[in-house]
Image 1 (cartoon, helix red, strand yellow):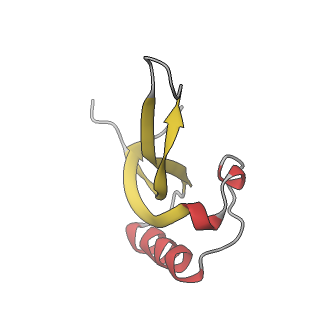
Image 2: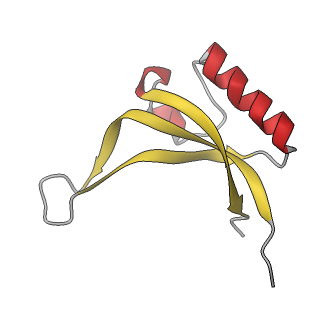
Length: 84
């Protein structure tokens, strides 16, 4: 059965986030999921363009609230299966 893909907004950080820094399990990541939009491709892209243009100081994802907008390099649209 083919899974349905949903539009999501992601962001890339200017500097990678380190996990387990200084251990043998150290890893980094610089792309993260901001959230699902459940909007059309055009509406989602327009929202991404707005975020990149206006650089909002606060976003709707509580995880992102730990970062500042200055940590975000850019936002982009992607597709993903629903989480649940």
